[in-house]
Length: 82
Image (tube, rainbow, N blue to C red):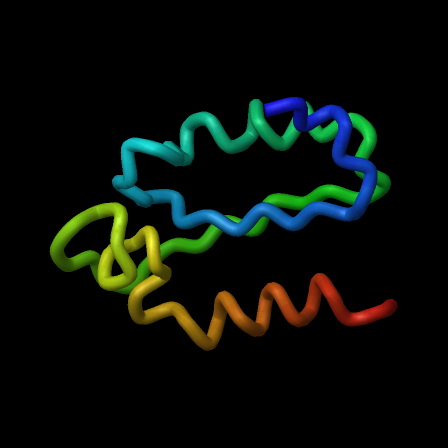
């Protein structure tokens, strides 16, 4: 994906223990660095919660299970004009 072409602000939200094989946390920083045209970019990392079942589904860390309020608050804070 040509991430360097994205020219709008980008917020990446990820759980450090996300077990989904399609979006490993270990690759997120390198991906974020490729957003060279984005005027603003930030990575919000979350810890905690609970993981149950399929690691790529909502009840796992992938879905921020048990962290919903914190994740929504973090996203809202990023969006809110300063």
